[in-house]
Image (cartoon, rainbow, N blue to C red; front, side, top):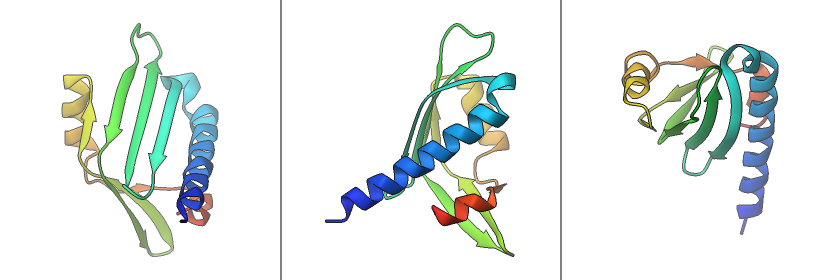
Length: 110
């Protein structure tokens, strides 16, 4: 019944994340070719074309949590599937279950 609201929310989050990525990260890291967010299932799917690479990288965050604490908003990514073994290991060592502060504007969407 309210599926259209969830899809609208997801589309707004994708738009905000694309804008952030393009303005803050693209020049240094590469192009975000595709981004999908499913807030109901708590999944993120990204396809990135890193600078200097000839093949895109596919990243699927299979679960994530949003934590509100001390006035801040944090993303805590869980399990993921990444199509590069070395990047999968790096993600598991450095990012999985870690807290990443989100911009305050994200609170309105989440």
